[in-house]
Length: 135
Image 1 (spheres, rainbow, N blue to C red):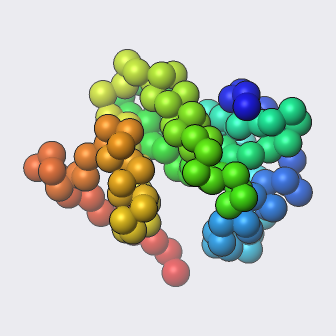
Image 2 (cartoon, rainbow, N blue to C red; image 1 turned 180 degrees about the vertical axis):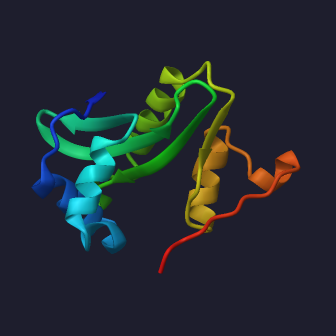
Image 3 (tube, rainbow, N blue to C red; image 1 turned 135 degrees about the vertical axis):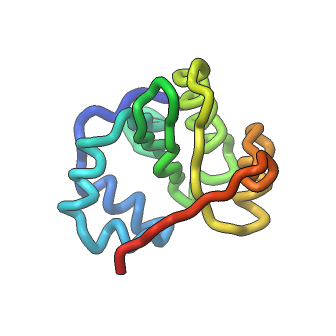
């Protein structure tokens, strides 16, 4: 497996990946998803040969804050360390940044994964988080 920057947007493979994990809010508006990729700070992808296995996409300023916007792995390739490798690559790239944040599903599986990577819930830091979603 190789982790490298995702530089050339391939709509078919991106829609296939997002659909495979059920993220239809993204796939319902492929034009918006494309623009999101174009305005992302960094997108890393995991490949086996030239087959996309998963990706991590970040937004932010890269100096004071980074938000891990998306981290996804095709279901048939999950539990093989791909998500871990992608997130480690993001953390390594931005090791100088004080705040690296993400929002995720509130499931035991996702909480255990992010805790294993050193993340803590915002409430444990004496903070709280808010989100506004249109629609």
